[in-house]
Picture 1 (cartoon, rainbow, N blue to C red):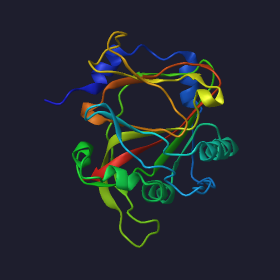
Picture 2: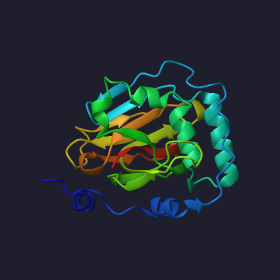
Picture 3: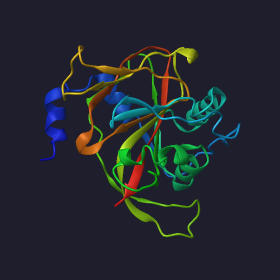
Picture 4: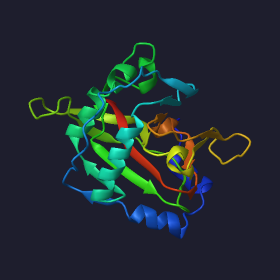
Length: 239
């Protein structure tokens, strides 16, 4: 039987503080895509190798974005709003096809991880800034039904898909003065300091973790100094 993540979330996670609630409320939905900086230098800048953190659950791609590109994307986000989301299938397609991500994900050695035939990324792009004192309380990420365009124009009809893995691209780390902000996973659906699996943030690192019924309880720890910047989308498989 599938696990009921919603009821477990309510039991496992205390209500958010005013700080966390205010941060969530500040997310701005916009309909005009920002002028995303071009991928310069050309990506990938190094061989992309999926590194396993938890088998079949959590992997990372280090050096997915160079530090200079992360800086450009932070600056562009500030010009729009420091916490925003946008439906932008063109950018999602670029992120999938022009960065080396598609080749890394479709490698036959890891194709079994994703829960189906991967067709691209969720066009719902979110950018978040966490300032000192802010965090993301323990929660699960849901799987959602979406439509995915497999080209950067409108020549091909969109495909029905569903999200299966969360993608988090860290745009800052301790190198930019961010202290704290680790993404922490709990393997047994409850907070436990003895069992926690912390993933430290690295500038330009892409964290992928399984979501939906097999999602692990996780949280973004409090930022104690500096700023944590994250770009989020999701891996999509054919529905």
